[in-house]
Image (cartoon, rainbow, N blue to C red):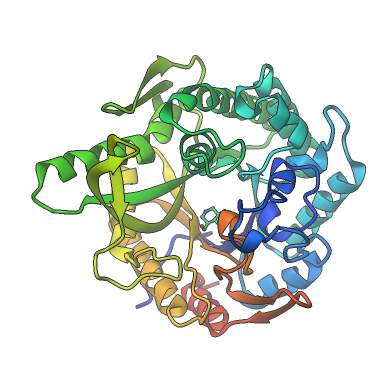
Length: 430
Ligand code: IFM
């Protein structure tokens, strides 16, 4: 099915620095990964894919794929390894990346924070550190002025609630805090960081006579009741949906931070200057969860269960393209003024058995959304390369390009060529 996508539609792929670049030695994760038991098989990010050293190889792959956009993150820990000390080599590296992408006709889409932080900042308390917003905003301005003044689209924070949920509620990632009570301070701090960076970058861009687009990349999951007619499951799924999916984008629209899950969390406050600090909606869509209520550590909590009987990816996530359309519709209904950029969508599929079909189904879904009038501006497949999947280590294979980690060689999978053909088929006629 070939439907028209809007002129200038972005077709691309996405990566994140820590997952692909290698040697993120000044980051909080680098030290934490050394602790046995934190990452599956005790793997460490190490040299990862050496995307840092082999960027030009990966750029050739992007050219072969025919993309016109590439989403990647800049690593703050490499730019500012010690507080106030900027690393010129890192700045030059990213300048080169942007220059090469622009030269290849590939729009650089820049993420400022994708899960990892400089260790000095983490030691001071990450988002909740005193002066956190000043530090983050200083970094953001430096990136804009020194590296990305020619770029148009920025994501301040990737998947804010996945990041904070893992780090402050579930205690799975650094700094490993457990319990909802820990969430409020870093959440407020993060929103202040975002707000200050949003206004500062817009001011810088305006001075240069440029218009830029700034937002966050929100991980939206579908939460359905496990037992469709069970009122407890329905209420629990609804509470989770509101808390996980809409707390952050609502806050960026209204300036009001409200999160309520009965018995677990109740946050309600206003953050001055936060309203209307997203210019578009960055949507990361992967899957859905079926929800029920169960006992965990002696208390009633939402329990997620993947058992729908439908096929799953290698991580056990249900393949559910219908949820993509449902999510796109909900985003549009909730924020009609915003266009939507699909900042991530992908599948862990080591055998590459389902990836081509996965992409085709999701792109078809996207074109259905476009026909309904949902203003979608682009689709970025996660990920260009296999990479370091956080606590899961290197096992999950999300890449269009297969990595051989023994010699760091790259091999495009069949789905790479299928995605290339699909991009070609959808390319706007000249
Ligand atoms: O690898 C991650 C990425 O860092 C954030 N979004 C989801 C991806 C797959 O789990």
